Length: 194
Image (cartoon, rainbow, N blue to C red):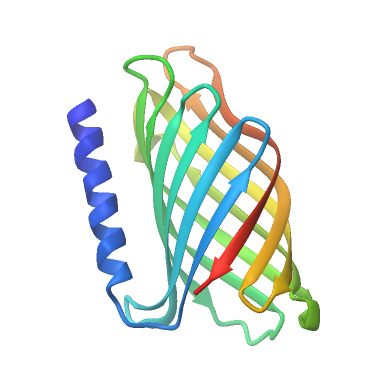
């Protein structure tokens, strides 16, 4: 199982490197902290899969219990013609090494991200994401993965954004293991666009 995890993590890093080499419009690096977790996220928006505004993201997550989760996602926009509302959808893959030995999880989820710009001149927006990996797309010691979050964003400088919100991130473990909650708390962070 650990060999599969290492292979999967290598694939994530390779796809991140391939996406980072593309010429495009923008990149963002984010750091989000809560009382028990830290998350580092890289986002690259640009031409992928025939869409000029597709978005690749790669994430490293670490909890106080030493749960480590790598994830990567690719979303494309839904063109609704509404200026302040952005909806994106697509897959996200997770590779997790949980605290307990031999509790490794790999999952392919589907989901959406929504962002609504409240006040344009302040960069004040509300955003949320919802991803779910059902049993058929979850491998290892879990039956499903649920990753939900909502946050409020505010631009404090042309390239600098602060944000805060709530995240619900859990795995439904197999064999009567119950739910393994990785994060269910408030978080705050900062993002830099370059």
